Image (cartoon, rainbow over all chains, first blue to last red; front, side, top):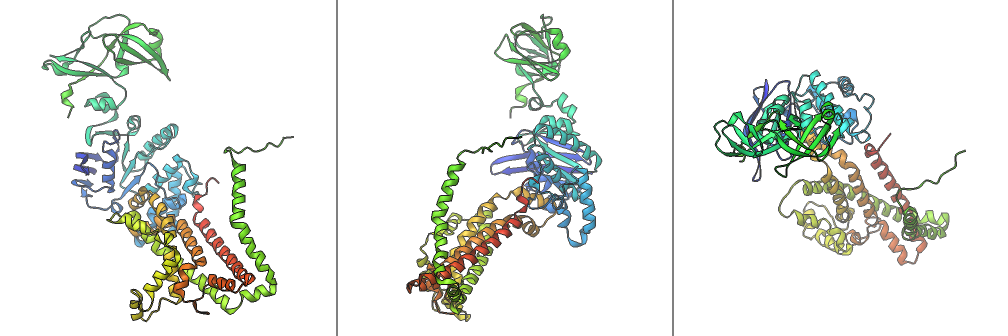
Length: 357
Length: 279
């Protein structure tokens, strides 16, 4: 009962857009394909929809092979970043389009179509807009019309290509929580593409992180955020501080400081990088242990309830970013120029050979 | 009491550009056109009616408008197809064909007329095949239409091309994902988007066709009550130094053409109703 993607490969000329992708999407889930531009996420989505041909591998839905099925036979709803509404049709006609183009014997009656469209207008909170043209709507409204249009044909899969990419920050937030609710209400498997990690973490049941045509990691938002499988995922999901050092028998040595790296007990004198998120760092006034690094406070600013402290390492020219909450900040009472020690609460160490291709 | 404040336009230079526009249009278009009416008024109402309703002139009007209309119609169909081919497909020699489209614009109309007459004459390269089918092209209204098709083609193609290029691929993909067949995508999605520009191209080709003289005059044969076009009637009057008569015919053509263009414009406005912004 899933979308099954197995061993899918795609080239554009000599550029390999997708490299041997295999992925299962369970029925009813809302899955995000997350990655930077050029990572192949949109290509994969368009292949599921049938808008791109499949060179190698297969895509099946509920066990039936979709590979050679034309897009207009696939039973998918596709939502585009730039809405792709029919400009010359009213909102009503846009939503009814999918029903109106059906073969006569499958087409619902005029009355049924009207009922259905009005239902959908209600669902996307646009009742009263039926007679408007797309040109008369705001971006958020247009995207909701596009969504209603896709849902009108009662698709098995709903595919969304950066659906909120063209909208401003506030509308985007509203629409994505609304999409989450909508997905829970209707029985459909949804896949959406985004390059916005916050959006993916916020909305999706599962996140598929892609880079360079490959899947880096698949997991729930908390899994991928808390346990990134690769330096790329670490870097892509939020800010991260890098500590370059030598790894030897379970210890990462930076010269002035040393960290435990229990995953690498038998590593012998290798270059390695420690990854620490800004909120995983403590700031202390005195050096109490070997894993504290001397730094000088460089810049302090607040973002809403959080405080961001930028510190310059005393032993190198690199900067460290620390995130504190209000209480911590008040207690520390830092001043710019002061020398303090940062100590990681947690650290994940990767050896570069592992990920350099 | 509120004081009336002069509404300031955000863009500067309105006064200057509007002034130049009005003057330019007056000198180039309005004054010459009004001369047509002034000159023809010398005939008096009675004389005017007599000139413009004479059998020969009426027939010339009929020929002019009918041939221009059918030529514009033919161009609308085939121009759309040519634009489609040039935009949607890539093939060797595409740029060359694209360049050929403009040729009717560049070629002196008399040259075109002579070339077409030679080709379509009864024993001409193309004409001989029509002769086999017992169809005469040169020196008939059909020949006039052929010349006008030649002249009007670039209008339709050049106006549709950019619009077709600008239709987003995504819109078609959206229609396809909603289950539409290729035919439905064309008739329900692409064609309605093209219709306004198709009408524009049609009206330009039509307007050009009504006024065309040079290329038609050779292929028409200019037989009274058969293949005389209205511009030729004007020329004939001029050659007889009957300026008032010539302008009278011109005045009627002007009014009818104007009415035609208004109708086409209204059609266009109707087909463009979705582009209205706001309430």
